Amino acid sequence: MADEALFPDSVKDFVFDLHDASRRSFIPSEQQSLYQTTFREITAKEDGGDGVEGGGGGMMMMWDEKGRYFPNTAWPSSSAIAPECGNDPLFLALYDELTLRHLQSVKRPSVRDRVGGWRAYAKLFDLILAEAAGGGGNGETLYLVPEWCFDVMHEFLYQFQGFCQFRTATYAAAAKAADASDPEKGPTGHVVDAIDVLSQNRDAWAVESVLSYLHRLVAAGSRRTGGDGASSSSCAPVYRFLAYFGSVTLSRLECLLGDYRASVSALDVIYDPNADLVAVGEDMRSPEELVNGVFPARLSLAYHAGVSYLMLRRYKDSASILGGICLFMQRGFKTGQLRKIPGSEQFNKLFDRMIALLAILSHVCPKSVVDDAIASVVREKHANNLSKIEAGEEGYEDLFVFACPKFVNPAVPDYGRALRPGCPPVPYGQDAYKLQVQHFMMEMAAHATLRKMRSYMSLYTSIEVEKLASFNDMKVEEFGPWLTCFKHKMRQLERGVAVTPGPAEAASKGVVRGVNSDMDRMGMALDIHYHVSGNVVHVDEAEKTRRFETFFMKQIENNYDILRQLESIKIEV
Image 1 (spheres, rainbow, N blue to C red):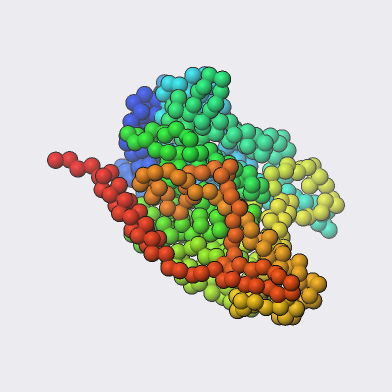
Image 2 (tube, rainbow, N blue to C red):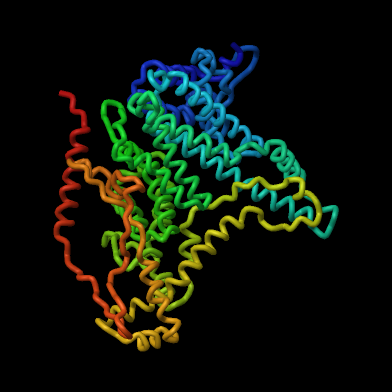
């Protein structure tokens, strides 16, 4: 009883109601209010008292000078609130994850906090997978709103990324101190302690375990083709939510590891045109509509898919997906719609990074697929860098370093070596980041020559190879392979087009519609066509026509969106 008296009744009521909404009543609107509103209100709750509440056994609960319950401190432990949820182990694991996420957002986690975070997520996912495998997938015993499911998956990978960066910084600090000229200036106590904890918990946040959990969650809730003919429609909605948001998270992870093909392939589950609809409250949605309905998930998918397409030299796909989401965000900023979403303070930063990626794409992909409004923003924000590139100076690297994700090295180092003198004080893990930048710059070095070639070819309908080579400061024998190279670089895979009837095609502006990578086809990103006949290059510039049907289709999409918003408004008479 003493533990229960350490927190106010509003906390007890919140835990009881959240448990009821997730394990018994399954009312989405009630759970959404508790998760998105009540939790934040209690965390920073104002109280009119004197800041002290009595507790059993002489114990007292304190809050800050503003009367807030947990603004910079941990919520009560799961063992303390266990009586409010009947000691339900799965709900207690969800509660641990929710409160751990809050604590790590208000204080800098220690090495033990990071290891504890891994144990908490491993326990939660083991319980979810066990319940899904034990029959929970065929009968609804758990319900979490889509926003909660995505937040769990997003935070899981965020903590993995943070752990990799912490491991890198700790190893580098230990190696640098151990190699100091003054033997008395060895590694500080907290660095030695961190190295000791890391060496004892080498399994914490191991990349193979992280990948295993994500793949198992995706498999547990996505479309299944087993001997019993079971399909995803037989799963409870929560497992399907976790599967589709898990695929978004898996795509992000593969992008951070530099496996861009796997990053794109991870999204096939979402873009499967044969996937069953999933129940979201009273609505039935496709997996793609489910992801688009949670804007942070849609944003994460678009950004990391855009980066992956760029690194795979699929420039049109990258420009299409990044340009679409940026156009949506630009409208959302103007209307204030995006500011209502939790975590909106990060949207501007990601918008700027995607605009920088589009600045790169505007030069390496001559065939424009970006809306004029976004193209104007690109020119305004990056005029200096673009002018440097036009002048033949270095400008790509600055843009890419600003816009790229924080790549990680998942390899576990030899911690004992870091404490021995003679260990090179190289920032372990930076090689992953530098490798990706180097790979990108090697590709851009070739594009500098190709861009110059295109600028000359666009001025002629036919020109001798020798003359064109002299314009590019090359010998004729060296220039021939470059003509072939230009065609090769601009010939790339493109996403297929879905042929789904009805107004649903307007539901996901800025995201490639429901087709998986099996339907990719070869295309050309050049805005000119050329061929060599004898000693002459014949150039045929693509005809530039105004596509009026695009304007009308956009207006039809806008009209459909307005009608859908009107239909979602509940009017009580």
